[in-house]
Image (tube, rainbow over all chains, first blue to last red; front, side, top):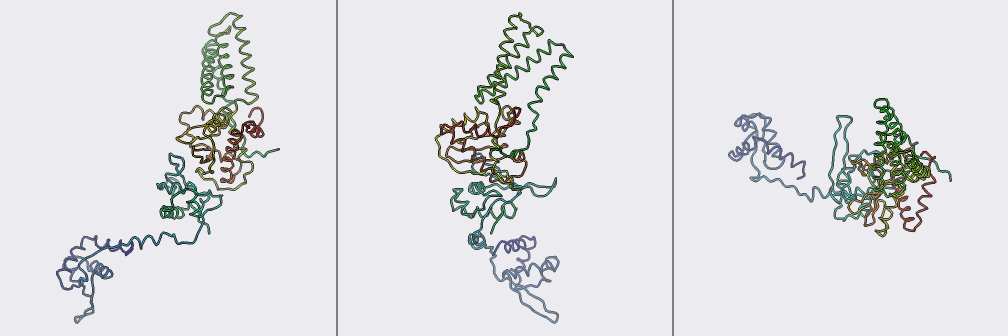
Length: 199
Length: 270
């Protein structure tokens, strides 16, 4: 399960009526959306949607039946334990872009970013960018880890020759184990148009 | 060699406006309270100048400030004790004071004409920009790591003393770093006397005790150039210039520093 799926499931489980519907499902052998809705005094569409979502997560199973009228579904519990499991290694590490082809970086021209130098003078403690125009604008400030601050301190200027991430890491004398957090801030700053990605 | 000036002309009026203000105050005090009080006010003004000059001397250890201070104190003495001043002395005493005052004026004039009291930050920025190309929209408000050097710490402190004494700029020690801040004539009073002056808002070259060099050019100094120069080149150039100065200082060739700066000096009033 990834974060989007988890968010969707959590959203449904957090509904006030979720517990009551599951209590019905525990009590009844199977139940239709109409029966559950009338029992709980809810709108049938709400219950239908809930039951369908739980079915899509294989928490419920459904069976189509027709009793001298148009067919409908009856739902029953497929499992009695609901778990929400996110494998961070699978979901996040794969997105660390470490396997991407080599590219070079430098600060973007006219980025408008404001880098705050840490007290030591050898690294940045934060980077701020002004988003929006005029009075409606807002400052977005990102506090940096020491490794990120050192890395950005050594980021080539807008008119300088761009360098690869590894070259900047070497120049900054940052431990290579910090590469994932550096790639994270690089990605964020590319999206904020502070860093220019070349190649 | 003819060098192309890349900085905008210095339009600072801080220098010329001071005597004008003093004259206005002097004139108004004469009109309101008479000549004696007006001279007493002038005495106070000169004593204030003297205090500021001595502060500058103790800060940068440039002995020419003493000649200026000597002239200022002699002016105060003359204005106070002359025939129409607040406390007149005998003619002989006044004559003696006038002779000493003229001597002090000659010394101060020499310091002024030979630019011994000139701050050379402007020339440093001119020199740094000499071989830099134009490249718009490359400015970024952050320091640049400019490499690593090997040096003896005593030499660095010696160079810092030289840098201040010769009015190339001011130096500041912060933790394990010496910061060299070039000071222009248009900004020297702010740099020297403003208690809230923060070097981080101004251009500087920092040399840490472990040999790392960082250079920062402020937006104000960058916009002082007529054109948008390639910022990376400009920063590297300012840093290299300081490192060259330091090399020359270490090699006992301080005169080379003055030679290179004086190549760019303006007219006598600059």
